[in-house]
Image 1 (cartoon, rainbow, N blue to C red):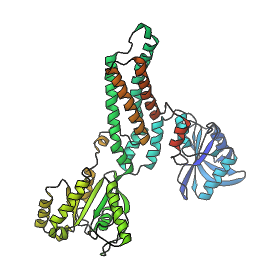
Image 2: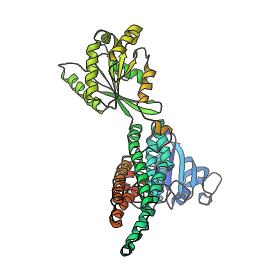
Image 3: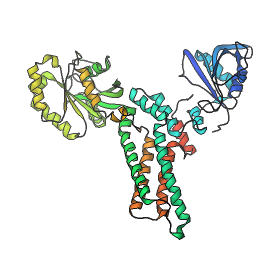
Image 4: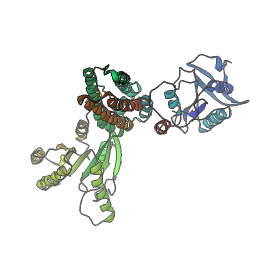
Length: 466
């Protein structure tokens, strides 16, 4: 990839809208922009100050393509670190195409996915973890994922890693110095201080690695399976949670023959609800396939909502308690919420009796009327209680990127080898190899160690124009 040329792309979503923004970045960005821009005040765009906005027209020879606003950023004081202009034009797809084609004829080329942010990284405007956070910020669809992406963009994660790397690097240089004076048997690195540092690094790495479980949930949403017999109100519950008619509701048992999924934001967290086919004995081939998928979804879900018809539970409570026990025993670590539906048809004494029957099981019990939408808010609060948001509330660093997680795991393995070496009084030359491995993994996170393949894999997932 050539990084010295000038690139252009649509920075806003494709399609018609009120306005569209076309971004140009590179050595000749301002010159190319000036060659097609005619200011209403007659100003020369190339002679204007950085971070200024100018009204005028995009001209293709004597033909006016559109009236636009052009925002000027002179490098290195721009997002990419290069000369950059952003053209805000009317949102017609025809106008967008005409302006981009004109800029291409003037010497720009189409940007590749993530190339503006790649240039920001290469020009030192962002480190690699901050650059990756840009993509996370764009794709964030709830408050929690937005908060984490913003913290990472501000350098919270990379600063923590960079500090650990710098301290380890200082000791690594002392270890290397010892190797130069190996024949004189001297120690420049205080082993006690070094052991304290390695112990502290191990603690921080374990905390960051552990945070990935929460971060992955926040980033991808929490899968919640809604299961139960046919016709107990699973589809009605999904509709009540989503506050829309998403699933087909019918008095005919076995209506839902496949899984239906949709997302809901609760308290800033994303939950993916999965309405499954009813579990029952059936000779219907299609329905049997749906029931098989139900068990697969239970396996994949992080939370299971086991829904029962309140009137049937009142009559066959002990039989249903046995069913709940089977699911609980099969998935002992999976949070299980038992939901008694149609509570509006039960008396207070009935509900109290149901609670007594479930008292011996380690499950949450919620009573609702999916049809009347009562108890839904209480159920949402219960779901939210399963998410450990303490680290998020305390503004701690949370890892959401699987590449970072993999590097942290490898760095921890290297640090633990260094720790073992210190305890075993291993020679400096052998310890230095493990120290270098740890430094390498730290460097891959922040971008001090990169290669074209790594950068290609990361930025290929970006949208064009960012």
